[in-house]
Image (cartoon, rainbow, N blue to C red):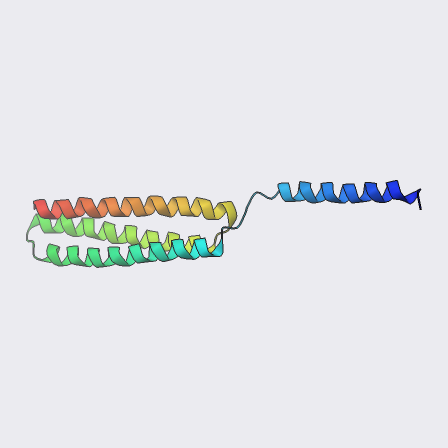
Length: 129
């Protein structure tokens, strides 16, 4: 039995070492499911709100006349496209995991900032016209 004790100890150490090495090699950790759900619900709510705000701008633009109206309608179409892009990014985000989820989240954060900035810009243009 004494002859096998060092051998068993060596096997146990190798097993522990290999477990540590394998777990250290994992780079992608899944975000907590509740975190993903909370974030996606927040983005969905912001997109819904943006849809309502776009609708309000559309109604205001319909009251305008002339070349200014055409330019505002073009900007409104671009705003709708940006919102659509954000919705697409949100769907992609829901499918991602680990570091890919982090990258997708970063992308949708940027898309949402651009969308909100474009909205504010169009709103200012509408008020000036």
